[in-house]
Image (cartoon, rainbow, N blue to C red; front, side):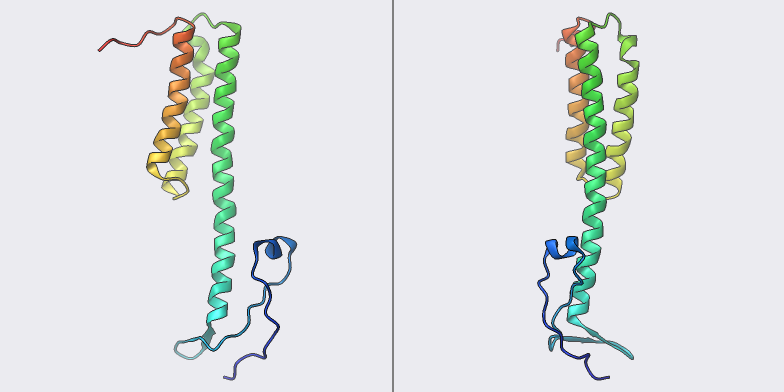
Length: 145
């Protein structure tokens, strides 16, 4: 069929999508032909924009969840150090929070939000924090090599 009527090209900007401005691309001569119907190259780029935005928001929420769970672990361990925990059993709540953080981190690797090495580094950071707190309280001594 004939191409759709020309519209004024809109700015394909991130801020325009946030304001809810309808995004319109200029219909260019570039056309991808398929059996039975015509897809204009502009449509492909608009769909790509929409999917990228959805992915960005999804990834952002997953990363935010990781930071939130990690912060809860750090705050819990800081509180235990401040009160001067006497036994390792007092760290049970912190360990539960670490397990929840690990689960979130591993899930985001599976979903492709984080790279495996980044995830391992984040997990290591949580474990190091706990180990250092235990050493500080005198509840744990590192095995000498």
